[in-house]
Amino acid sequence: MWSSLIEVYRDPHLVAKIQQFFGVDIKYDEHDSVSDFENESSSLQNTCDSSNGCSSSGDSLLIQRHKDSESESQITSSSNKKPYVITNNFWYYLFLFGTELGDEIFYCTFIPFWFWNIDGAVGRRIVLVWATIMTIGQELKDIIRWPRPSCPPVVRLQNKWSLEYGMPSTHAMCAVSIPFSVLFFTMNRYIYSFPAGCATAFLWCTLICVSRLYLGMHTVLDVIAGLLLAMLMMIPLVPLVDVMDIHFLTNEWILLALVIISIATIIYYPSSNKWTPTRGDTTLVVSVAAGIYVGAWLNFKTGVLLKPELPPPYEILWPSYPMLGKTVLRTTLGLCCVIATKAICKCLSYATLCAILQVNSKELMQSENSLENKNKTLVDLIYKYITCFMIGFNTVYLLPNVFTLIGIERPTFYTEL
Image 1 (cartoon, rainbow, N blue to C red):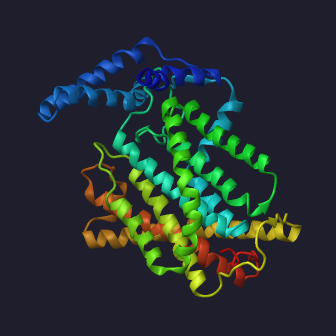
Image 2 (cartoon, rainbow, N blue to C red):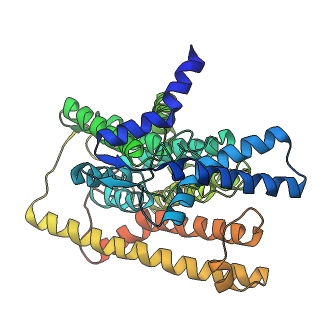
Image 3 (cartoon, rainbow, N blue to C red):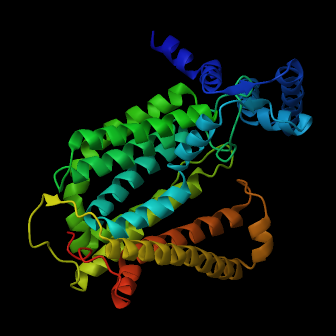
């Protein structure tokens, strides 16, 4: 029974039907679906035979995975045309927006915005839940190694994450961890309509999940697995994070353990049979969380992070025009500093590490990623960790102090333990 259900929900034809339902007219022809696969399989088989390193069963599995992940790029390059037509632009742009809610651009804007303009105590907890769930999801991808849905019958409307494996969907895990963390950590802290909050979190989650199917990036089983895994993980994580937050701020040894764990997560990341960007994405996630907590700990140690005078729950303070102007100014100035931090840290860390390794930084930066290119992997991981750590640190410590100096601070920022 379970095996038959898995096959049903893993079937790429089901994804293709969902795409067609939302207005994607799939136009594969017979040449695309047969001859390109045969040529690609033959080429890969010859490679395995010449290397004398593949067993017959390993050949078959590797060929199937290669066909699943590369077939669309082969078809597109050979025919120089897209094998689909968008017949409903509303769904297309809505789901493009939805999938960005689980992307790096969203993290780099939503997380700082929340700290600078809403609530730092809730923000720290959200980041820790998100980092834990995303890290486990990314590692599982490179352990399970299930390919994304095959093309055809599916079409890829976006190839940004095509190099990653598909199971589980980390977009689906993000769709659970962020909106429902916001809900759980604010429902006893602020006075608002809980049903309205549930509805918002549910719509947020649904939009991201359906967008992954619409874009052809995941099977239905990938999405379901991501949702269930994130839900199960949040049951112990939410109360645990709520308790551990104060310990990270008040005990430097526990905080040091958090930083060490974040580094160990990258060093001992599960090995894969091919290069994928998941290890780099995991580095981004854990380093941001570490940087945020180091910055918050420094605020506490310098005496500027205090307990609030009144216990929760609090009334939501809707901004006046002057407050709204300061919010826009904080956000604009802060995001510019985030961009500058990324550029400066990348330049300095790349130059320093390349000098230590005695390699050309420009050549290394332009070289292709692969398992064999050890220097590029090492430099990329270290630069991403340093950069994202500093972004998290500046978001919580440096920039709020700058906002205070120029008189655009959020008054409650330092009363959020």
